[in-house]
Image (cartoon, rainbow, N blue to C red; front, side):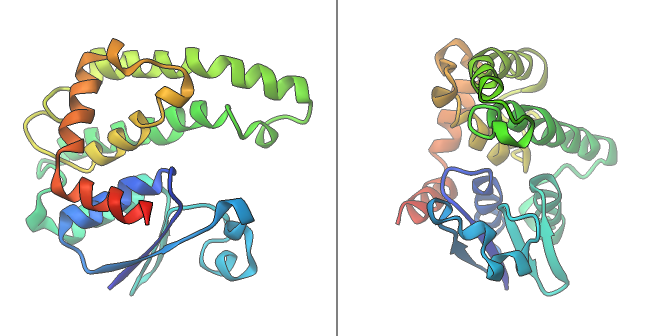
Length: 205
């Protein structure tokens, strides 16, 4: 039995969907970011980084979305959430790493300026840049990375819930998803999956 720590509106949604798609036995615990629960002494014992997601397993706790997604896929091979071919799996990891290390960071500049600077003017400048940097990232995904109908082509993989999660932030980041037809189609396709609908409903409770 796994335990997923999450907060609504965060990248933890990707791992939540993957667990549901895999048919895993898991429970969830919602953290209240408004009350800074992620930095509580209790949660810091689970994840000293003070962030979500965190996945508690019988072998220890995993953090960082790409690692968690790969672990879920490899723990439930019957769900076929990762390519069997080693090079294709590395490509999937490359895509997820791009979302984690570049796209998510660009998004975070909108409200996490104090992580990188101390001057208020710097925070405002970072926030103004977000629509441009997010649009550029998703233009690259649209043109060169999203094969269609799923990220890796015909096979649904751990890349898909991650892209769906971050694409859900575009409107708030000042990017019109309608200008990205492949991404928009992928988002709609994901929204129709029963596992996605179940997880979204669970996270709204």
